[in-house]
Image (cartoon, rainbow, N blue to C red; front, side, top):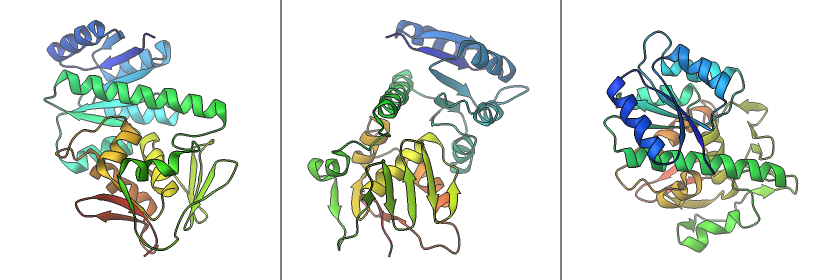
Length: 263
């Protein structure tokens, strides 16, 4: 199956090189040079995935992302950024991006991240047709134990999973089919990746999930021990879930991974 990619990059050499590489990889590519063209092409072409540079003249990549998300356009977005600070990466996630690549990058890393986004989109669509969200299949809760990636963290603390696909853990309620989540009475505004990460942690409440297990389940690709990708997403998810005044639910197990539990 040929996937369509909208590439928005104002640096002409980078745009040309990426367009050529993506075409050779088998993608159908629409390449534009600024944010205004990117929005027009997104509305006109309806691409399968968007590759969006952050720094562009006029409307920048963050603004493009915000506009598309405000229009309820859930096309997966991979941001290209020269900014390496965590706050800058968080700004992209806050705008609604699904993932990011820091410049300079290897084109193979771009390919890997695009494949992971497209796999998740395909799996999400198939799950919706079957009445299941991502990670809500009958074997989802057993996978970390089977791969040796998780370890029980004490007690019988576990998620409650209803036949409807709703997961409850502590005061979290996650509706997989509708892709909505609440903590208590407060609905959480989550990006695609944040939702899938929270759902994975909640379905395995009380179990420590290691980094490689989470990377495999969420991204379909292990970016290696040097990657800060997961830490950024967990940090941002905490800002939305573990608000001041509430009991923290998402915990770091140093050197291993993360666990959702009430302490």
